[in-house]
Image (cartoon, rainbow, N blue to C red; front, side, top):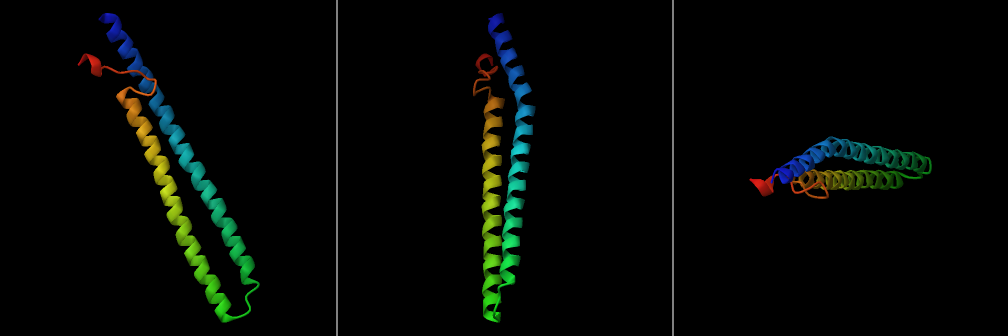
Length: 112
């Protein structure tokens, strides 16, 4: 029984050591996605500015502006969903780690 408790404690400690690392990985993943998003938006903004130089009428300008607003709205909505998915996936991983699963071990639940 003592060996089992010791093994469970070691597994819990291993899980606790993994959690800060996993939190850092989640933050880096979110930051990287944010940087990729900004890059995509800047390219889209540059394309918009290039198209402004081709405007030949007020109607053409109005359509270009409508497209810009629609694209910005769509891109921000998609980005919010992407960040939410990353956060949700990482939260699920952290919960599993806290519960002692995914290779970290069963934890002390079995002895309580």
